[in-house]
Figure 1 (cartoon, one colour):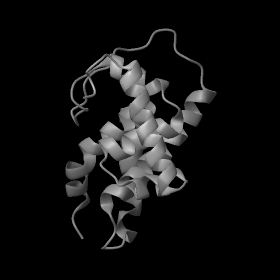
Figure 2 (cartoon, rainbow, N blue to C red):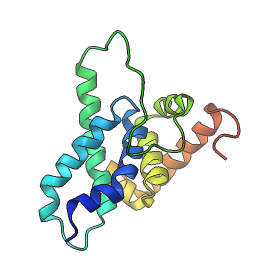
Figure 3 (cartoon, rainbow, N blue to C red):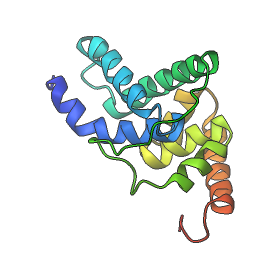
Length: 158
């Protein structure tokens, strides 16, 4: 079994991109940290033939749901601190219009877009993580991309 540090180095940037797409740039690093803390605890029992990437995205999905629930219970701050680039990477460039467009997608579409297009998981894995059929995951991802193309600046998603 590989050292856990190698897992973090290899998959950390991808997990952060997924977290940013699902919970937004403000809570992404918290979701990333929670993902890898949970993964560290569970790593010794992970089967040798497990798909580590899908396993981490599943954990990230659960942490993102937990964060969204916690965010719904807490008061909104008066002033939001500026988003600062992470040392673990982010998709492309820091683009507030893209984050706003992603935030406007329904939850299932946003998750399907993040898990399929950012994490590179097949629709079957996306369906397993989000709870639904492969066809529903494929449709949610396609609808999400279609909506993004409509609301995000023209030509940016080609």
